[in-house]
Length: 272
Length: 260
Image 1: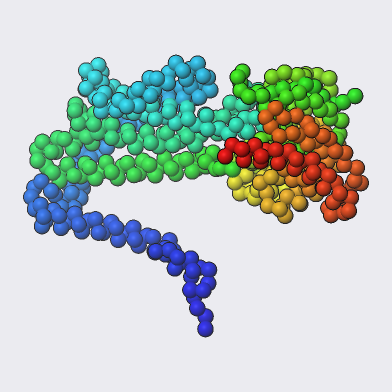
Image 2: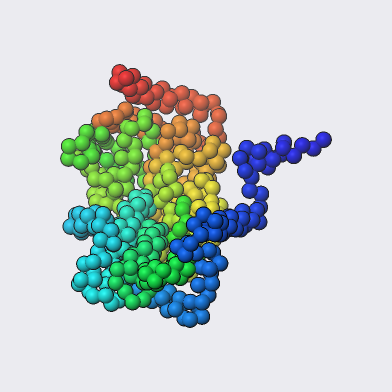
C-alpha cells in the first residue's frame, strides 16, 4: 500500500502545524480574514456600540462613494498626496547625499552625528506647532514636516548602508586599481542602495502619519483635515471613510514603491 | 634575485597593539607557487594582506621586483576565502569584466578577455547569473576568473577553498594546478590543509605559533607535475610537513590549556 505520509512532501506537511499547499489556499485565507473583520465590524457597530459614534462598514463605504461623487475625497487625497510627494522627494534628495557624506568622510560624521542622533528622538509631531508658527498654515509647514520625517530616516539608513558595504568588495576594487570616483560609483553607491531603499520605504510610511498630524492642527484640506472636520460635525461615517482611505492609500503607496524597486533596482537587492 | 622580498617584517595592529609578526624574512621566486601554512591565529592572512598592500608593516621592508610596496596595485590580485568580494548586483560576466572596466579597456576587448577567463575556469554558460545564483565553488571560480582577466603577475589566495566541501575543493585544486602551470603566475596561497599544500606548492612555508610569529621552516616540494595524490612520496612529505606544523599547533593548544 502507498502511504502518502511517507513521501518527503507528506512528512514535511505533517511536521508543520499547518501546511499551505498552494497559492490559492493563501488567497482563500486572505479573503476569509477580510470577511471576518468586516463581519466583526458590522456586529460591533450594530450590536455592541449601536450609535452614531460607530458607523457600520456599509455606511462608511456609502460615505466614501458619496464623497467620491461630490469630488471631496479626490480633492483631499490629491492635496495630502501632493504634500507627501513634495516632502518625500525633498527629504530623499537631501538625505541621500548627506548620508553618503557622513558614511564616507569621518569628519562629516563627527560633525553631524550628534544632531542626527538627537533629532531622531524629536518626532515630527513635536515640530507641528513650530512649523505652523514659522511657515503659516499653508503648504510650506506640511511639506517641512514630511521633509523632516523623511530626511532623517533616509540619511540614517544611507549612512549605515555605506558602512555595511563589504570590506572585501572595497579591497578587491582597490586591487584592480579603482580610483576614488570608480570606487564610489561602482562599489559604494550600488552597495548602499538596499539601505537607501529601506530608508525611503520607512520614510514613506511615516510621512503618512506626519501629514495627518499636520493637517489635524491647521489645514483647510487634506485627509487629516477631513477626519478632524467630519469628527467636529459628528459625521462619523465620513470620518471613518477618511481613515479607510488613508490606510488603503498607504498600502498602495508601499506596494507601488516595492514594485518600482523590483522593476528598476532589483539587481541591487540581490545578495551574494 | 628574489622576485618578492620580505625583510625583517614586524607587524602590530595600531600603535600599541601586540606584536603579531616579528622579524619575518621570506623571498619568493618569480613564477613559484608558495604555500603558507601555520596554526590558527599565527598571522598568515596578515602576511598576505601586507603583500596585498591592505596593511602596512610596522617595521621592515617589502619589495616586489625591487620596488617597495605602498598599497594595493593591479599586479597583485587577492582571492578571498569568502565570496563577499564579488559584487552581487553584477552578473558573472560583469563581475569578471569589472577590473577591465576600471582599467578602461574597450568593450569588444573586454568581452574577448572575459570569455577567455570564463572558459579557463569552466564558467561558460553562467555569464548571466548573479553570484547569489551560483554554488560556493562556482563563486570561487568567478573570483579566480576575475583575477585572471587582468593577467596580473601575482595572485594572493587566502584560503580560497577553505569553505568548500571536500569534493569541490579537490576539483578546484586540480583546475588551479592547471591554470598555474599555464599562466606562470607567482602565487602566495594560504591554507590549513596539508594535502592541498603538497598538491599545489613548489615550496611550503610553515609559520610558528603566534603572537610574534615568524617563518619556521621552508619545505621544498619536488614532486613531478602533474601530481597525483596518495603516492608514497606524497605520503612522506605529508608526514614531514605534519611533524613541523603539529609542534606549533601543540604550542597553541598548550597555551590555551594553561589559560583555562
